[in-house]
Length: 316
Image (cartoon, rainbow, N blue to C red):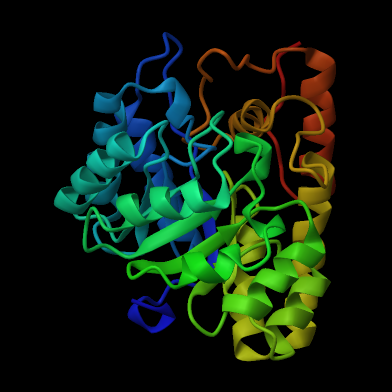
């Protein structure tokens, strides 16, 4: 399998998983959020990724998120399911369920906490990616697993050569390492990375490569969707206009190392979605805490307003 076996590109939200006030899975809000994404024209979605709080869900809940999500999207855009887990066997079982549910692909990080070596990383991805016939997306997430796949020379190329791998989501905080990944593998597999800015536009339109971005939550979709569409059409002037608006929002919320400006990234994302009246916000589950400090909420409101959104009025 290679990049030509999928059409994955453009802007994808890494969707949060909605929970009710009593911390139950909110299936109606999940379906409504995916409907909102369809209206925004997103080019795909990642469910049960890092933003989806997979670590706070039971296996049964993760399977249910997959089922509700695939049904709600109904083929309107690709649905890739995160199957990250502490063992390859757990991840493979989730991948098989995703395939049976009708997902378009699966994604995984290396196991958190384990700090696998390059050889162990290859073995893990080989086992999980070959558990199904679905296209597989390797997820490099050093902030979450304390291993940066992009820092081991040649590893990304070896991963791209695994039979089921069709894409890489490279969320390293090292821009030069991400560019090196694109140079090494973009002719073979799709690469999603830190491309939603002028430097990313230069990479994509300058012949180096890069296919899109998958970011947490999708509040930037009204700007990121037209940015990638303009970039793919070669309309640089329009693309620059949209990406500057996106960057005002993104830089206001997320630090260069992918940490949040005001709270944990997922907590502040859900707070922002709630302020915008969007489905999919709601509560976070422990160990995360909700953003309730009025001053922090006011600061998030200011970022959203500066970026051109109209947050709901806060209660006094």
